Length: 410
Image 1 (cartoon, rainbow, N blue to C red):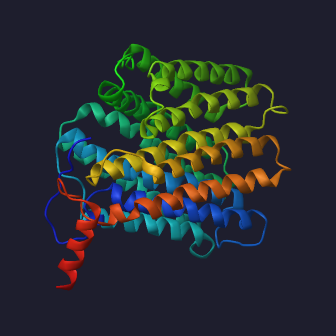
Image 2 (image 1 turned 60 degrees about the horizontal axis):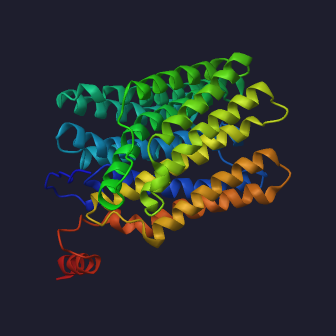
Image 3 (image 1 turned 180 degrees about the vertical axis):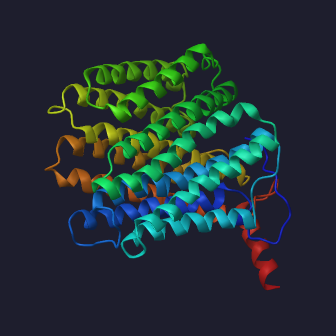
């Protein structure tokens, strides 16, 4: 993880790098929204949105929380790819305000109209793609333009979500398209960071078998995965689709096995990356079985394996690691990191089980509670790091708090 480059400016530390505001806001939104979702589901609360309650929940998980985390990751990774300064200060604040405006517009779309809500909400991912593309092109880092393809698909899925909900009363194709874009992002980015971080840790602490290097095998799996998800998006119930999804599950499980994850149990910060990616083949297997036997395997099991398991676990693991590394802390999960990791894994397992046993509300409530603890716990445990300047070499947390107090009050 490269040392962050920042331009001196008259703005707070939280606006010095994209991960800072978007990881914090994304975590808070993920935790609070799920607590709002349960009473909304049972009719105890309501929104002023044109979306049906289920669509509002799906939309805000995909295009609220996940879009924020994707933006934070991209705006932090791109300076490492290009060697350029990050988007910070006023431009970063504008992106944050656009994201907030989207959340308000969706919640009050019944008052402002579906078209206005669509334009306001869709503008965030469009702005993120534009900002990322400018940095990559100016930095002549052409190879990383491919990362923007699934993000652009996510933008298209958001726009389509509004149109589809307005025309049909609910979303269908657009939600699968968005999930597909997220899964492809995990397959691409996970294939970079998981073996890389694993190799770095193993070389230092546990010499022996190392992750297999990136090869044509990985390229073939990424391409096959994307094609299978494209087919699932538009023809989800065909026998051929179900079989292709199961093949994708086997291939992604084989890919994961090549990364030596079984040798990382001593470091939760590395292990969680492997466990998060494991939900990708689980999601493929469950969605494939659902396509073949919908009366036996509920579709919700596969969707939540992708959403809560793969996306939830992967985003939290990256958020914790990036927060520690980019704020000058030791790359060690600690008790706090282990707590949020355990909670997100519990949330995923319970939510998959709840799909098979919808009458057991304790599974649904348990999953929602664990999810809220995971993301709100991240905000509590790591939020201070995001809001304060990066630690200087040799500086500890107590000294930086003292320095900030002295600067502000003396």
